[in-house]
Length: 150
Image (tube, rainbow, N blue to C red):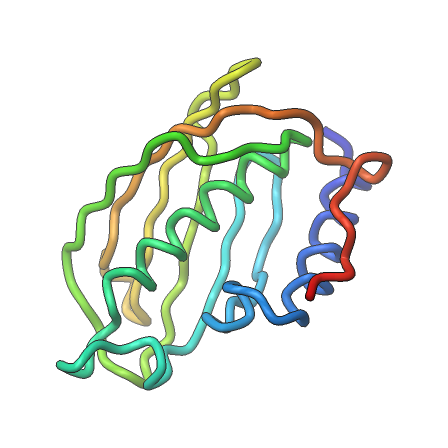
C-alpha cells in the first residue's frame, strides 16, 4: 500500500466530512489513517444521546460501521456492509470524548472482515464489533466518489 494513497484518503475524508452527512452529524474527526486501520474521535453531544442521557445505541452502531468500513477502504477497496455484530459493554454520558478504532482482519478478494472498538477517555472498552464487507470495486484517486455531496 502506498503512503500517497493513505494521505490522499485522509485528505478526502476530512473534506467529505465537512458536508452534511452522517459522519458530520456524529462529529467524527479523523485521528489516524494507516494501512488496514483507522482511528477516529468525537465528543458526545446531546443530539447523540437517548432519553436517559447516554449515547444512543444507533450512534455507536453507526460509528462502528464507519470505522470498520473505512479501514477496508485504506486498502483501496470499495465495500458495502453485508453483516455486523456489536456488543454494547458500557455507555458514556454527554460531554465525553470517545475514540473509535477500525482494523481489517481479513483482506479477501470479494469479502473483507474487520473489527471495531470504541473506548472512553480512560481507554475503557465501551463497544466491541465485527463486520463483513462485500468488495464492489476499487477506491483510489482514479475511481473515487464525487465530493459534491448534497
